[in-house]
Each structure stands twice: as structure tokens, then as C-alpha cells.
Image (cartoon, rainbow, N blue to C red; front, side):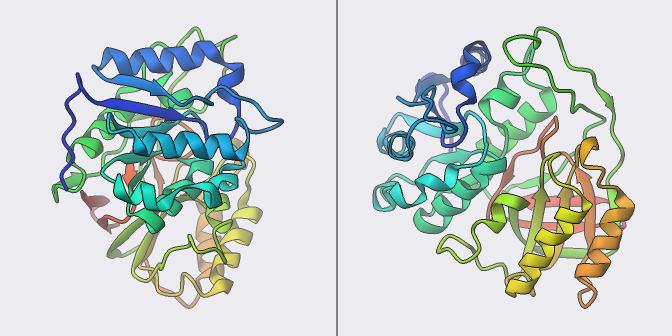
Length: 331
């Protein structure tokens, strides 16, 4: 089904399935809402978006209830997480997948810890999910959302399930500067020149797009929510708490499960400076972990825990060619 959005009638629903950052940053949340409203969307907040329960945005049941209600509400066409964190997996067994399946003509969007919901909703209820921008980190950027992120978001949501081609762009600038939200984020962040896409292993590949935060993705192993990855092209990212050593450990873990023996390629997002994951490290890790495989690998795409970010739809056909540095998604 091609999804067409009529802005003056459609709603974007906002939920907090993970960390309680929205509780502590009301100004930032308000700015994200105002940005969406300025683009012509109505916004509906989940009842527990700003809740706090120790280190999560409310109890697991309350967080699940917000998601269930957003799917049941016929006005809501897109559901976006405020932010990621660590505990979105709390809600997996509390979601009403039968109800969600009956209302799966919606989009669900988020990255980082929200990866786990992207897969559960897609696997169990056929929801079109996107690893893409979230309310606090992207839509609430000062003074407005970065245009690269906004244009990628629009391209995907307005054309998803149409079969149209998305020639994945590359940003000229990026930033990882961290400002204290609601205290310091009253100025634009400093941008730096972006490196070109990096060829880690040459070749071309075509397959199915599986975008994920790697640490979170590993939490799905052994659950009913883990997908069949035969023919997959993995789009992987992680935050600055990871390193080359932990990246290799996680990839080795996936390899030892046998779940990625038949993947077609890997695309890495942009790693933050603090992780100290270099392109040479990536080459070493790939050749080490995947010594018996010959799929192509490319790195430094615009997704991950820095900005701007691409919107990447789970389960769509994708191809890439390292010689021509070209990546195409069939939406």
C-alpha cells in the first residue's frame, strides 16, 4: 500500500518506549513538536511520553499502552519515538500484535534502542518501520531540523511502498557536538566536513535492507523477533560507548549464531570520534570475523549517533556498488 499523507488531517503520534529524557527536557520536546506542526502535521502525545520510572519513561505497561493506543487511533499515520536508551525491550511482550496487525498501515520510526521495536512490530504485525530521526535528537534541533535529515525523512515517508527508487545521498557536513538540552542548546551546533563513503571491502551486492543498532540487534538473538537474514544487507550503527574491540565482539557473536552466514553485504553508519573506530580497524575486523566470506562492505553513511541522519526502511530491496559508490533503495 502506498502511503499518502494529508497533512491537515493526519497525526504524528509521539511515544517514549525507552529512556525518560523527555521528562527532563520539556523545552526540547516542545521545539520538536512545534517543528512538526510548522510543517503542517498534527501531533498527538502519548499519555506517558514524559513519565519517569527509575531509568525508563514510565512502567513497561504504560509505555506499551501508549504504543497500542497509537496504532488503534485512526487519526495517527506515523509514530515516532522521542529518543532511544536501553529498555525498549521491556514492552515487547506487552504489545497487542493482533490489534497492531489490524492497523498496520502506519509507519513506526526510531533508531538506537528503538531498533528492537522496529523489528518486533515488523516481524509480528507487518508494520512498515524505519530506522530514522527521533523527536529530541533530530526534529528538535536548534534552530530547526537539519535539512538533509528532513529531506530523507520526507522522501521515505511520502514514497514508501510505492516501488520508487531512492538514490541514497551523502551529506557534505556533519556534527557530533553534544550540547546540554534545555540548558545549552540555544545555538546551532558546529558542523565539520564529512569524509566520503569508505570502501572497506570492494564489490557489489543486492539484497534486503536490515538497518539496526548493533548492540540492540544482538539483544534480539534467541527471541521470536529475530529475522531471517538470508540475502540481507545489514546497515549497522552504534554509539560512542562502543569501540573496535566491542564491535568485533558483537559481530563475532552474530557470526557464531550462524544467523548471518548468508548475508550479502554490510553498510556501516558514521561512528563517533570517541569510539576511536577507524576505517583501518573496520577493515581488520571484517577480514578477521568474515575471513570465509567475500561480501562487499562500505562505511561512513549518514546514520548513527551523529547528524544528519538518513531514513532507512526495514525490509526493502537495496543494492550497492563500491566501484561507483552508489546505493539504491527500492521504496
